[in-house]
Image (cartoon, rainbow over all chains, first blue to last red; front, side, top):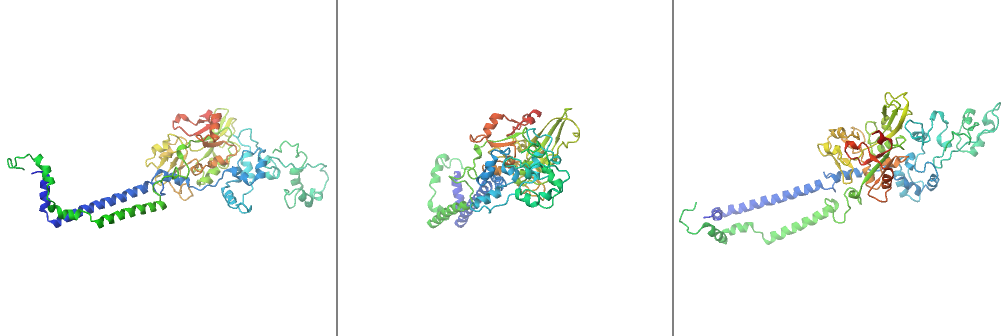
Length: 231
Length: 304
């Protein structure tokens, strides 16, 4: 007798009903194993897929890092709309400075503007830089290259930077120097009343001015010959 | 046991014949249970086909595998990380210490406000005439720098030389932070950028200790953080969300004196290759052996 013969005899000795049950049970376990392995395979495929957000795949994490929303745009897009400023900048000392260095993050502004090409007002307003923006780079500080123009803010004029300096053209708006003697005269505003200077120059502060304030800019020596007035 | 002499034929010869000759009628009940009827076969086939079609339809809305003609990388459409050689050049000779890079980084990446949490910072290195080196970095330089060094002991001394040193993650080719992470949370992408998987990070701080450039910090609780996860390691990603879409990092974009230059050295149209060729920048502290991708120019190299 051989082994197969003995298995056959054992199989034959079992009731036919029990034999059917055995085949059914084995088949059921087999199908169960197939389904389970299928579920596990699908689960693993999903868990490791770079295309699923919650997966453990590296690319899925890199994708999340890549999905952060931006605030800054490429400063070269500004010239598409702001042509005069861009043209002026080409000859200015600030020519290599990106717009966002002074004006801050502009992606929201440029996105809104691109979405409404025919409406110049339909975009996020961009703030005019304050003195603090100028001071950040131009205050005299240990460690700065000597090629950078630096001022000591408390020794510089007290007026606002942009009243005299144009950062786009690099040209300083030098105020006219007083050409007459200043002794024994009434207040400046007696002759140079608000009506007069308003028409000439919108930069003048409104309200009552003291002579001291006038002379901050218009005193002799604060004209084109003043070496301290730099672009 | 086979009784001796009961069968003169050797068992090896009779066995195959015996196995083949099992009468079919004896096995019939078993075959009847195991064999597949036509109806069951067709039903199974239909279910299989339906499953395949259903899975295909599901994959359209819920893609698990990349299909043919798909984008090169799953990270960002049309971004091929394998072709990139990201290069960052920091010029310490032209840096003016305005701190705009720190401002831009915090805004762009939602880095928490307090100074101890930062991805990039500026140091002022002041060498006095007696040969001492004083380093200060008030608030990481986010508000710029005061007129004179704030380093203890530096006040009143005559300055021999001074310069600003912008710092950020060097994106090392052999990053020690990746090696020490016990849960493999930090890893290097195909384009060489070292990232942190915030879901795996347990905040043990080994990477912070291992980084010789001090580029990492642990995110605080209760604040807006880059990964929206408190208590995990975070570091500069060279603005991975920007460079993978063709933009420059925010600090490079905002730098008014071009002290930070960035580009793909594999792209012939990118000016970074010409900059590297002309200025010959070098890694900062190459003796640390981490092979930094960020390269430095100017006095920082002479000091190091």
